Amino acid sequence: MNLKSVLMELYRDIIKEVLDFNNIAILDYQKVNSNQYKFEQNGLDIEVLFQESDFDEFEFPNYILPTNHIFNVAFSVNDDEGQWKKTTLGEMLPIYNTVREITTEFVNNVKPDVLVVISMDRLGLPVTDKSKDKIYELMMRKFAPTNYGIVKAVFKPANMVGFCLYKVKRKR
Figure 1 (cartoon, rainbow, N blue to C red):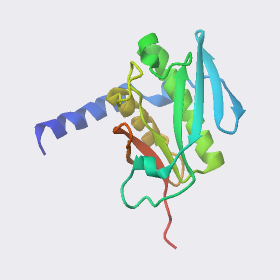
Figure 2 (spheres, rainbow, N blue to C red):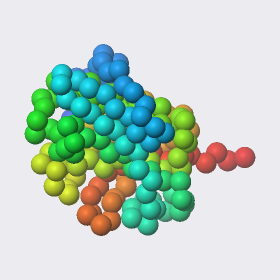
Figure 3 (cartoon, rainbow, N blue to C red):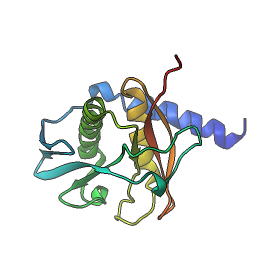
């Protein structure tokens, strides 16, 4: 194991300890329709939107078979996907945990074959925000919906890396 791998593993362990998501509030939210939710925190309006997507826009491992039942999740703070530039980490953690709770509810109700999560850059640029992506992935790994796995995904038009929840096919 090289030094970078050891440091990354240590980083993950520290983040898991520091961010015990069981102790982070889940804010009250409202379901607007089957694909849209909203909530508020400290005067910030947060919207979570699940958009149907085209399988061919993404790169997945070859064991994820093409499907038409694929969604991506987007959320914005005050209509801005680059929300970190306006908020502190302390404000963002309950927002993230609420988005995670909403995502789990959506997956349990809609049961998509694939749900893609790509983290938008803090300035809203079409590049992955790796620190946000790690937080999202840690949260979803800890609270993954039943019968879903997590794996890397790439949004091909912008070459943005993230991850997806995918329905695990059980062997009979």
